[in-house]
Amino acid sequence: MDLNRLEHTSEFCWQIPVEGPMNVPGVVFGDREQIMQMDDKVYEQLRNVTHLPGLVGAVYAMPDAHWGYGFPIGGVAAFDAEAGGVVSAGGVGFDISCGVRTLHTGLTATELGAVRSELADSLYADIPVGVGSEGLISLSDAEMDAMLCGGARWAVDQGYGDLEDLNRTEERGSIAGADPAEVSSRAKKRQRREMGTLGSGNHYLEVQRVAEVFDSVIATTYGLSIDDIVVSIHCGSRGLGHQIGTDYLREMVIAAADFGLVLPDRELACAPILSPLGQRYLGAMRAGMNCALANRQIITHLTRGVFGRLLPGARLEMLYDVSHNICKVETHVIDGVERELFVHRKGATRAFGPGNPDLEPDLREAGQPVLIGGSMGTGSYVLAGTTESETAALSSACHGAGRSMSRRQARRQFHGRQVTDELAERGIVIRSPSSRGVAEEAPPAYKDVDRVVDIADRAGLARKVARLEPVVCIKG
Amino acid sequence: MQSSNWNHFEHDADIGLRAAAPTREGLFEAMGEALTAVVTDPASVRLEQRIGIHCEAPDDALLLVDWLNALIYEMATRRMVFGKWRVALDGYQLDALVEGEVVNRTRHRPVVEVKGATYTALSVEQDASGNWNGQCVVDV
Image (cartoon, rainbow over all chains, first blue to last red; front, side):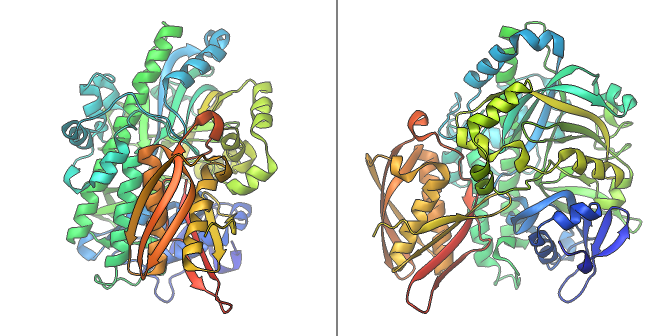
């Protein structure tokens, strides 16, 4: 990205000033080197988003921002419905409510050591992963609708987990306002055999070791100590979410002219929040969010089953579950006034700071856990939401490392077998159905997650709490 | 017409499909092949089942997205990969017969599932020499 097109407003904050059809400024977080390494497409896409109506504040790009479709990945934008604001299917993306759930195990690295390989094999055998895999749960039409309304709460009611899990899940496991009637039969059919599946691409289940603690007070509140073993699950709403995105993107692309919307990129397809189409999409998207929460809850149950067999002393309790592809109604203070906004985060994580009333009482002092996935060879992070993030970026932070290399480049440069062997030498056990998939997800294909998280911390978006190192990675 | 005149172009997070063909039908077929190649080697796919696909859209670009999304849907719900595409076009209506087989994880070693076709960097155009060129980024 060309620095000459940006105003340097603070150490880690760069602004695209309002000009022409822009309604608000664009804001990019990063240090000089990161910004220079960002694709020009991030600039272009961020700028395009600022053209949309009803925006409030600014449009933000997190330090892991990269070229997406419509919105940049790592993009945050908030709209006021009463000011003509829109909801954008492109701004949420296909993988509705993709997110990360992290579980404690109550084990230390030493206790895990001897069974690591066996654990990897069992997790790989029990958790459906990769192209063509199928879940063990098949839902009737009525069950599907109940799942789409209930989310993780529905899953717990079915016996997939404990009520306590919901207290550490965003929205207590169930998003209000879901409308299964607005989800197409094609989307439901696509989900029929995909409940409790991880998917492929950058989705994974990792067993991780707490390698470093940066903030011991918050780490204690979160229940994290050096050498603890945790499990992180990264996946989303599977085929149902993908089809909801497909269905509504098309409808919004075609309807844009009727709404008088001039879109600089068709992928920014959107509809006024208060229009019937906007309302239908919100109902369907919230159903997709519940599907993602139910999916991660079922995978949690399957994971507990594996640990229960191999490590009976393990207790897999929730640290937190938070999504990073969403549009949610949130209250934010803008110029001293509380406003209800429709916040789109596409590849960005909600990061509520201390005192936020939406947090469970036991998290209110520390702030919300922000779960950041790295690549399978590098670290992941647990961060905590900050007070400063509210004014900096509507309480948002990064969501991962972000790719530095296309899949095609990675495929040309790495071989899956070689990547797996190299990681094994470092004590990281990989299980995946696809060698080419492993090559495409090779650690050097991602940006340096340490650096991304460091900037998020120093920019005040979220505070570093702990770094997690992979021990076992089940990869689609 | 079957064509291998396609390639994948760079996109940070996802995969771009690009193809060229002497006819519009050939372009759509080549884009179908480019889509399969995201998942597995098209040459590895046995032609054991045939299914019909129908799409219609307001313009060529949207028709291309609809075509790719129809293939993605059939791949997802039938757990199939395709190795042959025969497309007939009538204006902006597409009728196709596609052939393939149920995914065999040992033989196909499928890399990644495709979530959907996007409208980013999307185009379908006829160049001065009469060839048809198209491209689309798919989310994986």
